[in-house]
Image (tube, rainbow, N blue to C red):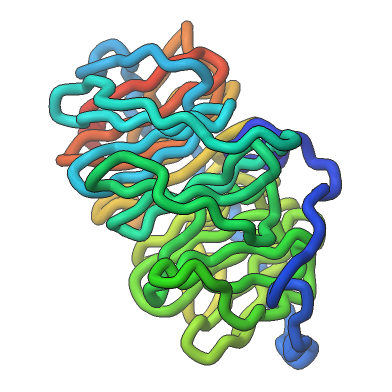
Length: 341
């Protein structure tokens, strides 16, 4: 588990994978992009939020060994377990359909990488750190691809029809073409980064906790177009705004100006994650409230969901109007109705 608010189960040591292929060299065009140092507003508290139990909202539960990253594709939910097994779940019936074991037999890597290109799930194999392509139509591994990647990067965003992977050194990012399994030209980041997210449009947002930066990358131009300074950013999700979990809480950031419009007094802690939906932002906290709801328009914390038994963090996705979230150290996958604001 990457310690600074990033879901996963690895430490924060330097990556062991050596650079290969086109990601090993990136032209540095980032020097001219200044760092925006925002004036942070006073954090918004939760005094007026409704508090409720997870039990009152829960609609299903599945026991799984160390469930972590999740993707939704082809009417299924795909869950990566810590040992590298990928579990296919029917979200309507709340049942496990298949378990796809990782292939290979050489070495071991505590990698986290997991993403979806719609017709395929991409998951790093713990054996040697390769990336496996799993067909969402057959639920079988169709390719084992040797590509360089930052081993503690978890979610891999699909932007501009490419999966964006951080290089093993953490200082560049490149797009994986799912049609031919090749990496495009790397984009130098000018910082050491660990995770990324995308939304609608060509932008990828890269989180760099060691350099206290959030970096905006335009995948159309192949350039860094903005830098935002926040202390120890660890997690990001993108809706109409960009939401950053950092040492000071959760920041609501204007994607164009990079101004911080609001800060919410919510700590993701170890293993936290976030999800921006059409109307809300859901913060999955580790070692704290199980779930926190934020209304981005009214800029207020609206709901706090608690549970006395599930204390570990996890990933979160939305399927058919309900939320699914993992609790990796509690070996649990939970479905719940979103609390009303």
